Image (cartoon, rainbow, N blue to C red):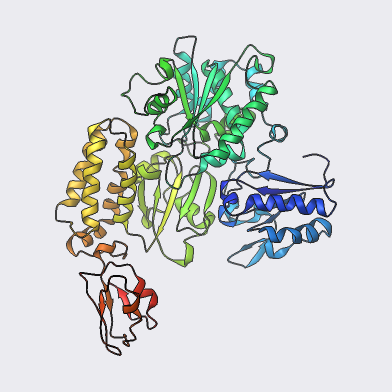
Amino acid sequence: MGLYRAHVLVCTGTGCASSGGKEVLAKFEEEIKKQGLDKEVKAVSTGCHGMCEMGPIVTVYPEGTFYVRVKPEDVPTIVEEHLLKGRIVERLLYKEPKTASDVPDYKDIPFYKKQRRIVLANCGDINPDSLEEYIGKDGYQALAHVLLDLTPEQVVDEMKKSGLRGRGGGGFPTGMKWGFCQKSPGPKKYIICNADEGDPGAFMDRSLLEGDPHAVLEGMIIGAYAIGADEGYIYCRAEYPLAIKRLTQAIAQAEAAGLLGDNILGTKFSCHIHIKQGAGAFVCGEETALMASIEGRRGMPRPRPPFPAVKGLWEKPSNINNVETFGNVPYIFRVGAEEYAKYGTEKSKGTKVFALTGKIANTGLAEVPMGITMREIIFDIGGGIAGGKKFKAVQIGGPSGGCLPESLLDTPIDYDSLISAGAIMGSGGLVVMDEESCMVDVAKFFLTFTQSESCGKCTPCREGTKRMLEILTDITEGRGKEGDIERLQDLATHIKAGALCALGQTAPNPVLSTIRFFRDEYEAHIREHRCPAGVCTKLLQIKITDACKGCGACKKVCPVGAISGELKGQHVVDQSKCIKCGACLAKCPFKAIVRG
């Protein structure tokens, strides 16, 4: 990082940027110059550090001091006290909740202790705009080793030995996939990176592209060499402007350094990589729909076979992996497949990055070894449930995943165990729900998403998910009837068997898993017209109890005139008029109004 005595690393990834990271960086640059430290101290923009809940995050090296929730107004204090006087600003250190003690080094924070950062190793620690910093972290060493020492066949063999499975959702063995494409005849082949991350609450690929774009490029170039491709595409949704900006710059830097383009590193191997911006259709995460979109056609899946390895982009053999998969590749060829395979389980090697969202204390990104339990991720890394409430369920695998109850918290995180439990690994979205979550409403939320994102090409997905959504809507609005649960299960079976692509085939998963583990909630909605969690407003009644003093405050704020009563007398709610807005609950000074 140069001849500076100190470096101030400021996270400006999307998460920290949204809470003021860019302003914090600008303030550091201003204060450092103001104090005459610009020749001694350098402020550096970095990618996501993972602990988004505590952003903006600032790390001061060489000490490694970890400051959290830094505001622009805190910067003069850090510069004055830490950089000038050598005194740590303790009030800005992460405070461990259980002991209320300050933790100066992020490696001692529980959020990081059980992680093993391979893919995210550089995120938050280097300037993603700097090729030199990536090279300083052993970047492109793997590419040099591959091009100068290994044949394409040896590269594929090494990938097979590593046990890496695709991190985009399907979990297909990467080495095997590369091998299929390598053996396909033809002089023209394509390598494609799927960065069309569309799961609600998922931001793993986005953060890697923003924080370490050269790692993804290096993995793609190695993959291109293995399969014999001289051209590649990164399909990235346009909603990721920072990722696209940094990828564009990384490609230009790599080309200028001879690491990408013609005759890479002086060899006979050439590869050119382009960026294709997607319009944000969830179905374009499916590989055949993605290729159609690159070609300028509507993103719709096609039947397989032929598979992309035989007939892909522009009908040429093609290989598609997602961002995280390519992010693992440089590490594998730096340390060796055997070393990489030490992490994980027998059938699920390496690590997996998860986006922790929902009712969890520590939202953010966590990279953990395969085989770790759901309980460890949620409670040891994620800090448990926000607000001290009770855990109810976790949705894993995105909108096509499954909801797992507390009884399955000790399920190991690996591909096969999750499928047995009624969920899927997916791309790594992990949404935690507490006791106030209605599982019928959760199923409806995810099915609403997948139904609206259906491309409409095949009848099972187009019509089947619509019928399922209609039944779920009826159940949550008090029109549910006996037999609805069985109808949902029957429809789900036919959709899973008949849908053309993985979007349709997995769309019923949230419904099936919630019926399996939370059937009593469905029955309460249908038989008692009651939502146990108090979420489904059409099933709720707002009632005024005997604690009412007749002050009239609720009557004044009711927007539809549903409350009546005399002054100092108990008021009542006309249920036919009530819209369940909750204004009266918030206004009542005696807590005499309840939802029931």
